[in-house]
Image (cartoon, rainbow, N blue to C red; front, top):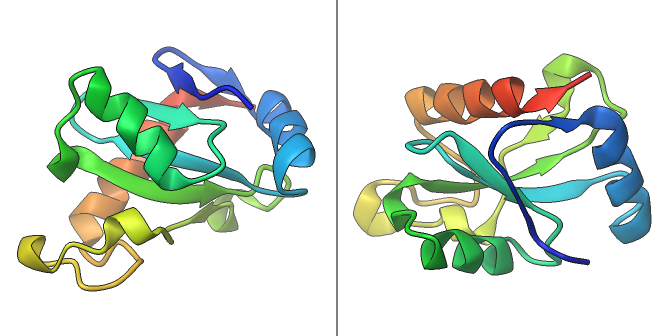
Length: 115
């Protein structure tokens, strides 16, 4: 599947179709919290990360998540990706450990994904 950079918006229905075509119920995404954009459609978070880096994103602003478009709003973002492991940046796990970064990622997703 082609990696898409979402700059304005995408619908949950589109994400659901994408999920069914790839992983069944989930779409991988990488969010640039500085630019307010995200890459979707990659098989790996690292593929999406590479596309964003090629387009000028800075690695420190990129965070990998999984989106479950059929889940309730409070449960549909999963903060789990190998690209999030950055011991030198203070993030020692696959999750996004700092609350302010989680909130920034969530804000970008809420702005870009329409019901």
